[in-house]
Every structure is written in C-alpha cells, then in structure tokens.
Amino acid sequence: MSFWNHRVVRKTFFKDTEKEEEQYSIREVFYNDDESISAYTSEPIDLACESLEALREYIGWCLKALDKPFLVDGEVEFKDNYEPKISESFDTIDETFDWLNKWEDEGGNGNHVLGE
Image 1 (spheres, rainbow, N blue to C red):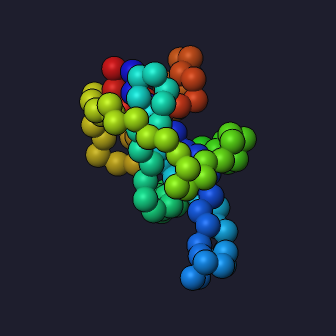
Image 2: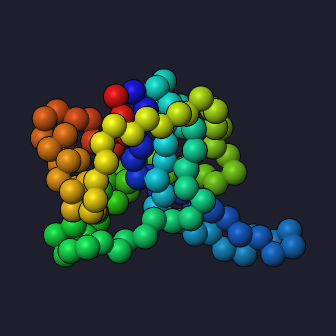
C-alpha cells in the first residue's frame, strides 16, 4: 500500500561555494510499498484551508512532522516504483480531513494512505 505523510526537509542554499542559508520546511513525502521514499514535493506545503477547523487539523498533521527525523534535500535516495492509486475522491478539503480522521480513528498508522 503506497502512502504519504508530512516531513520536515532541510535545504541548504549556497552563494558561489559559501553556505549562505539553511531553511527547514514541511513537504509532502510519498512512499513505496516497502516504505522507501519515492518522491517529495519541490515546494513547501500551503497552509490555506477552507475553514478554521480544517486549518487546525492540518497544522496538527504538520506538527507531527516535527517528531520525525528531518530529510536533507539532495541526500534522499529515491526509489522509482511509486504509482499512486487514489481510491477516494473529495470535493473539498474538509471532506478529505473527515476521511483521514475516520481512517486514523479506525486504526490507521498516522500516514495518509493514497489507495488500497
């Protein structure tokens, strides 16, 4: 079963050969069936939601990312056998949150499943 979750990614910016800045951001990370990383988003997540309750839940998921080891941009070894099979479709972010919360309440492992 493929899944995704939020993780912190550390990215280092250089000017010429001098380290200029480090930045930590939260990204969506996608995993293969063997739990190896297949990809992560190139840009940090967007915290825009349709309601305050949805935003509160989304921030909660982001806070969980802080409890996991961070990934270092440019050092992650990707495996290319990721093929998402989305079995659920939602019209709003609130419907997505409702489904994810129900799944977690029913024994989900805290990762967001793309499909079974």
